[in-house]
Length: 123
Image 1 (tube, one colour):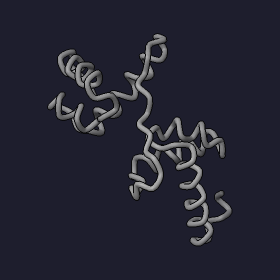
Image 2 (cartoon, one colour):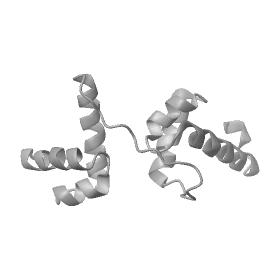
Image 3 (cartoon, one colour):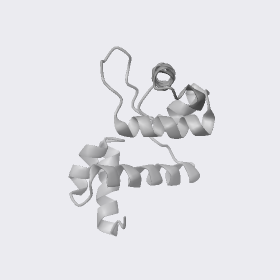
């Protein structure tokens, strides 16, 4: 998705005000969806890292909140799992919104689900 210089400037302003708050940033930009904004943000943060600049840390959700994993979080979990195996700290970095303990607990439940569905060989 192409971003105009004006859209990117609004993105940078909003990203500074609301680090990693993709919905708020998208509302500020006005012309992109939350998902497009998150994808742009991910690329932008990688660029900042390459340039040696500070990147805002991921939001940590603490246990006991009762919040279900979103489809996006689970997709990032699967990406991290395929890349890093059971290195939960590394998988959590890919997920970005969960702690390593939450990632490990999610993995345990996910593996049990695969076993129940007869897909245990995929673990």
